[in-house]
Amino acid sequence: MLVLGLESSCDDCSAAVVEETPAGPVLRSLVRESQDAIHGPFGGVVPELAAREHLLQARAVMAGALAQAGIGLADLDRIAVTQGPGLVGSLLATFSASKAVAWRQHIPWVGVHHLLGHLNAARFVAPDLPFPALVLLVSGGHTHLYLAKDWTSLQLLQKTRDDAAGEAFDKTARMLNLGYPGGPLVDACAQTALKGAERFTPPKFRDGKASWSFSGLKTGVKLRIERNPRLAEAGPADPEVQALCLALQEAIATWLLKPVPEWAESQGAQSLVISGGVACNSRLRTDAATLAARIGLVLAIPEPRLCTDNGAMIAAAGALLEPEVNPWSQNADADLKLGA
Image 1 (cartoon, rainbow, N blue to C red):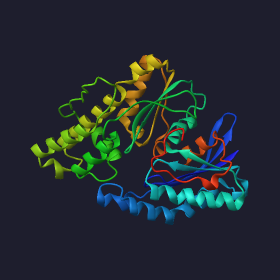
Image 2: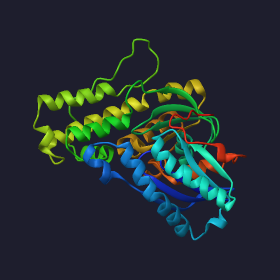
Image 3: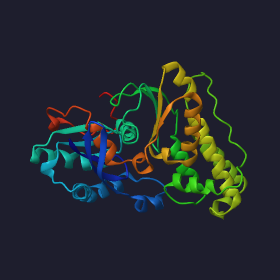
Image 4: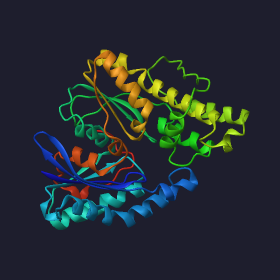
């Protein structure tokens, strides 16, 4: 089965062709158009600019993915597209385009939840993953821990109470004038550090419930820069900037992984999946491998290009879902709930 997957929930417009086989999904092509240069001057995604750019990119990424795979529309067995959640203007670009193509070519069509796509990105590296699995989905917009009993279900266990972990990376990079997007830049800076700065204090919750919070971490970085203003202009070659990036990276990786052992035991998990843009982080990947080996979990982290938003993960998820009987009544949903 050949599936064309489309993703434009935020600022990346992507299309991919995935062949679903008995052994798992095989990536036949992947095209991704980044908008980093457009949003970089603003230090974050501007929804209106993102939506307009997707309208310009949608046709090209679809055509590019088909050409790269060496097939035409007539060869497709299914089209899958992100239905939500995300920026509604961005979602509508590929959502509307995919429905039009599916209608014109009489191709089965399915809408996919964005987070279910991130789970299925792990199918490319671990198609035989044992379930149940803990699924840590962490990006600039999401920091959630789920329990998955198969590739098509996610049950929420805990989530951040405020900001996502990826936002802490982006805002830190902005405060240090490192550039955009912040995650890769902070990671690269941290890897050059000889030692870390003073550790950040982890958040505590009065109700005792398992959770995360990264708002205070951003504030902590801001206060340290205010005490030492030269850090804002020192650049990535400065040892103190490197030390601060290392301390931030260590804090995020440690805090994200801390609840995993307890949840793994209580839920009888056999594996751990980490996906989303922050899953590209070198410290998180290293610490996760160490933790998984220590507590006996199978670890599945997609390669970096499949961790960030991409059409391949949507195609992989869409291959396992039932096509809509009447897709033309479906609409993009910025707040799409799992199971909706």
